[in-house]
Image (cartoon, rainbow, N blue to C red; front, side, top):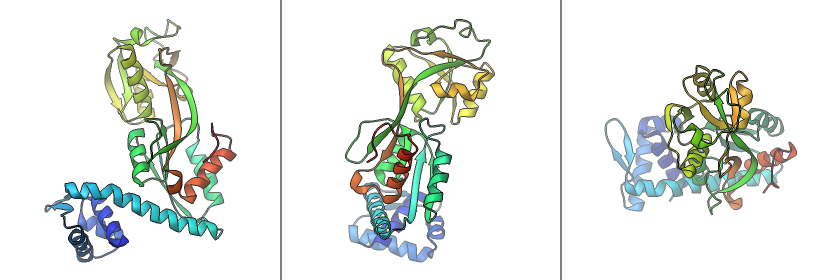
Amino acid sequence: MELRHLQHFVAVAEDQHFTRAAERLMVSQSGLSASIRALERELRAPLFVRTTRRVTLTEAGRALLGEAERILAQVRAAHEAVAAVQGVLRGTLALGTEQCIPGVHVAGLLAAFRRRHPDVEIRLRQAGSGALAEGVAAGRLDLAFAYRTQADTDQLRSVSLTSESMTVLCHPGHRLASRGAVLTPEDLGREVFVDFHPDWGPRRTTDAAFSAAGVRRTVALEVNDVHSLLDLVDENLGIAVVPRHFRHKRPSLTALPLKTAAGPEYETVALLPPERATGPAARALIALLDVEGLLASPPP
C-alpha cells in the first residue's frame, strides 16, 4: 500500500468528487481514478459508490478513512520531527478553534507563532467542539482550542486553559433585568432562548445544566456566531446563557449570574493527539502558550 494511494483516497473522500480532488492534488483525473482502483484491488473491496454527480464512501471506505487519516498524520509528524532535529521547524500547523474561546487570544498567538516559525504553513478551521475533537482524534487537526466535551482517551488528550461560570444575558427592558439577583434554571424555564448550534461548547454547558435541573427550555433562535446571538438579545427577542466573558462584548446588555447544582463551569482546553503523535509544530504552539502564561497546567 503506497502513501500516495492513501492521500488520493482521503482527498476524494473529503471532496466527494474525483474532478475536484484531482484539481486539488494537481494530478490527472485518470491518474487519480487509477490510484483508487489500485487501492481497491489491494484491499479487495470497493471504497466508493460512484454517481454522475458525486461519490460517497462504502462501509469499507468509512472503515479505511479514519485509519488513513491517522497514518498520514503520523507520516507528516515524522517529517516535521526530522526537520525540527535539524533546527528548522517546517511543515503545516492545522489548528481548530471555537469562536471567542476564553483562555487564549488565537489571532495574537498565531501571529507570535509565525514570527518565530515563518516556515510553518498555518491552517485554521473554526467549528464546534465536538467536530474539533473528532478532527484531532482523526489526525485532520494537529490541535484545537475547544470546550472540554469528554475525558482524555487513547486518541485524544487535553491541556486545561481556563474555566469560568455562565451568565444570563438579557435586554435591559426584559423583566429579568430588574431583578438583579442570582438566577437558577427554574427561574428561566418559560423564557425564549437564543443559543448556538448544539455542537458548540456554551450550548453543551447550558443544555447539561438545565438537564441536570430537570428544566426544559425553548431554543427558538439558533445561531452560529457570537455577534448574531448578541444582536438578537439586544433586540429583546430572547435571552442567552453564555460564558461570563461574553458580557464584555455588549456592555449595553444586562448580565445576571446563573447558579446551578453543577456550577455550571465552562472549561476550555487545548486538545491534542497522544504525545507520541503530537507533531513539533503543535508542541511549539503549546510551548508558546506556556510562555505567555496562559496554561493552567504544565505543557506536555
